[in-house]
Image (cartoon, rainbow, N blue to C red):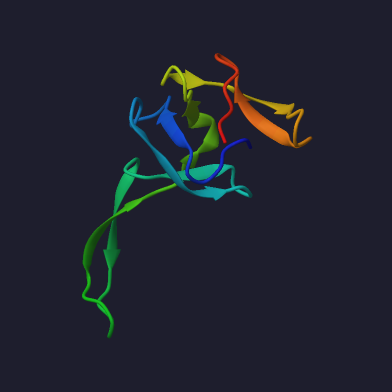
Length: 103
């Protein structure tokens, strides 16, 4: 999975298709991501000593295959590739459309 927390993504499939947001959490074992403001579900919470109960709106995880990173140059969805940076000799994520670095 080539997605990281804080990446700007767009949803490409499902009921939330076309929505944009940033990744809040990556669940690598389940191949899912939680995107801020996308896939909102209602969670019923019982009242406890610390909090009042009620119906909360929470972001639910969506499959990582249903999101694409947004190209930093063109602001459109793009695939991600990995190359080795000549200066630092480390792996760097790049956009397949514009060859711009994501980090």
